[in-house]
Image (cartoon, rainbow, N blue to C red; front, side, top):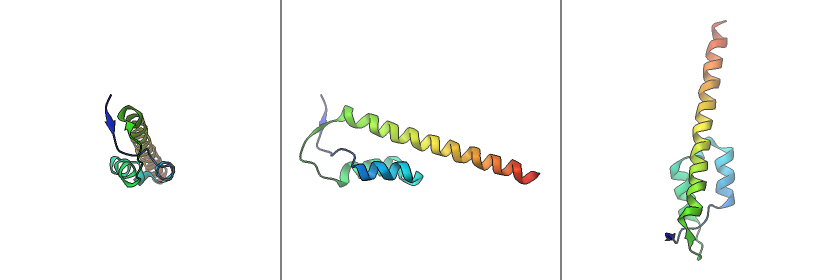
Length: 78
């Protein structure tokens, strides 16, 4: 079992990840893991799904923005 001394994602960082697309990236996840100190050790397998979920939200957000941009471009033609 692989253990790290990194803290859990703090609820504020998770909220920022949902509210602000620029916060949904690898650097913000790493920042959230490193900014908050927690004396308990946690299992890496508990952190990885959170990182994966955050990155999938980022991709969903980018695809949504691209589709909206394409829609606005088509509507501008008419």
